[in-house]
Length: 179
Image 1 (cartoon, helix red, strand yellow):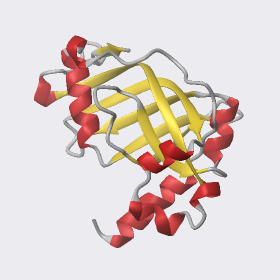
Image 2 (cartoon, one colour; image 1 turned 180 degrees about the vertical axis):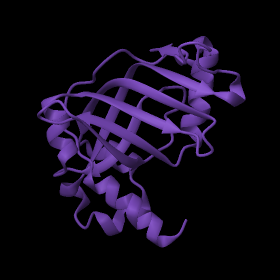
Image 3 (cartoon, rainbow, N blue to C red; image 1 turned 135 degrees about the vertical axis):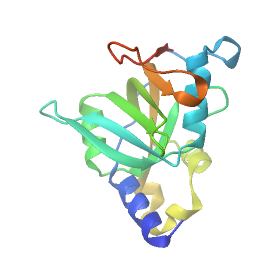
């Protein structure tokens, strides 16, 4: 990855925000009960380098920001992201934890949209677990500057031509997935 691109992505990561809360939403289904939609969504999420996190500002206006996509947890659809504790996302998630996470296959042959709730995690052990060494330049004081966003999906939709999942031929409605 070119250095300039990495700096851009990490700058976006630093501009994100979150707060510590109790865990929102239901837990994800285990791989044993995944539908074809879950399997396609997992493949897209696991291969993504970037995602878009959409929060709501104080006026209710959606705010979309590109973040580095950390690999999903084994068998769960929870999404973890690192961000700057002082960013606009922090304020937005504190005021309203409803959020959306969007992944797109770069060639345009599919996407995953997850709707759910975000929370801020400032737990030292979890921050260590998800820390990325290339973030060092952006967090000179990670203990105070760096927090995690933990996104828990409630439902979503997925389109993946490779998995044979396409939108409805008349309405273009994408196949839905529930958690």
